[in-house]
Structure formats: structure tokens, C-alpha cells
Length: 138
Image (tube, rainbow, N blue to C red):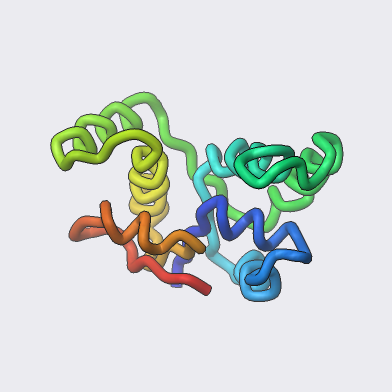
């Protein structure tokens, strides 16, 4: 089964004090798991500041991301993918930061994922559409 991981899963996998650390870490070792390349930037932001404060130094965050890189298949969205998703999302009323979740879903579809794992299922379920992968929490 092809799995897709959002940045909330990556953060929890990298930080031992996260409540879902073990379950998220286990997802990294499963074959055929992928993530959107932008999740690297989102994960760095959360690890080094974000809304929860500075958790790790920037150098450590960079090292963690480098160690994470070989565990996943990284899916890129080009300008055409991104504009197409923005256009579709705008018609559906997706606004603000929810666009990033819509872009994660587009990357998951591009990867052929059957399930998207997230710790923010409610956010994804509110914008998911027919043809998107199942949304699950580990």
C-alpha cells in the first residue's frame, strides 16, 4: 500500500517527546511511503520555532531532515500542479493555510497514495474530495 505522510507526522517522528512519536516513526520504515517536498520546510519551521516555540537548534533541525530524507519518496509539485490546485481550491472555497493541506493532498494523489497519514485529520477531511487518498491518524 502506498502511504503519504504530512509534516505533522514527520515532526512527531523526529521528536521523542511527541505523544505519537513511536507510531509516526514506524511509518518512516514502511516501504512506499512518500511526502511532499514542501513538508521539509514545514517540518523545519515547526522544529525551530513555529507556533510551539523553539524546540531544536537550526543546525540540529537540518541534520534531522537530512537523516529523514532517504526514508521517503519525495514528491514535487511544479508550477502547473500548484496553480491547478489553487484554482480548484478557490472554486471549492479553500482559503488561507488550508491551501497547504490541499497541496499535500495533490502531492499524495500525484504519488498514487492510498492513504494520507496526518495528526490533523479534521483539517484534511474538511477539504478532501472524491479521488483523494483516505485520511488516517496513526
